[in-house]
Image (cartoon, rainbow, N blue to C red; front, side, top):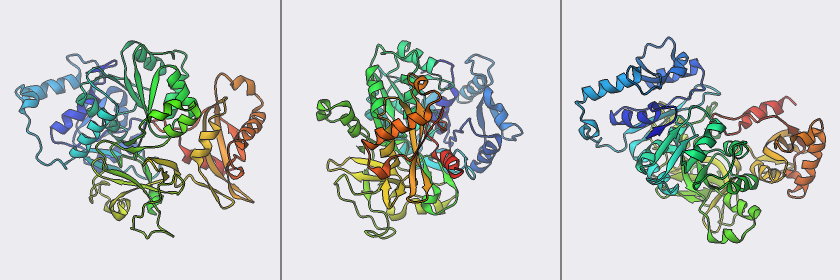
Length: 496
């Protein structure tokens, strides 16, 4: 079921469109009209289902469209559309439909954000979506007593398949129009919400909202997009929310394939690994435990495998796959294949066989994420390939630096990018959002905070990984799903 602000159109479409043997293309409502127009043309769309708030995005289109006024009442164009369909079907419902015999038929076409170059599409299949949905329901421990809160947008990689996972688990669903923390806490406290997904930045907003307090029921927060910091883990656990760290590939950059544009869409069907809690964690301090929780972990129940292999160079050739030692030290690239990875076919990147071929060099999907492989089989990302900071010949992981800087008690959010340095080539620059409880202490004294943070860093990081520059900012640039846009910060740094 769907509650609060109706919004039935989105979850309905994830079932009804596919049942009609059509392909669903969820569109990011934050795109510009010209980007939406390109997606509609490029995808070959033949019908548009649209909320009344976003009709300005399709002005001038010649494609038939159905507007939802989000009332759920007779006379609403969307409700009339559904009534017409029921009459056409003779009220046979789902029982009147025949299942498609080809489980590898495409079902979802997700497009990029379009931040650079043209938006680009990725096709996913019926089989992959089904298996990923089952995995998410199982790994999230969802069942008929669960209530899922929609904070993650459904247009982001098909909502990580949770539109189907929730129905598979017989769970209730609560939908929201925007990420509004007052409404989120209203549902956490009064609607029996047990599960939700969100990036760490969204989780930070949740635990720091004035309404935050322990919900009356157990709540699981499924976190992806970045590893949760010790401060965030402590904040969630303090108010009775259990963090579950998962990892998936919904972003990949074209420069990894020596192309010229950015690709941001679903290469896996949302998460495909989970960090499974180990019994011995209960004996560890929060800081020690958080380091284990920050790992990306092992493959999902329905995923085939996740490996870390040498990048082409000294140890391997271009298409050769050689596993790195499971020593937790040797750096390699995460690769995967199997049930919940996009299908390797000329049409996987919609109308772009060249990009597909490059993505699957060696018969596996190349993530571009640099990681180590631990003796227990868990993988841990050290950095994105584009985010490694090379300082004086040493490789510094921006993620590792961020993890340590986040332990400063006055830091709410922090991210690190490379900045050119005359002597060392590159050095880290940190952008910091101060915790609201401590921001007043440093008002007008940000330079003193920078010194304090550098001292803190020197006690925890090698010299080449310590930030050379620290800038306090009111907020960090983010995607629609809460991921930090380092590309925007690099543009700022390039001008310094």
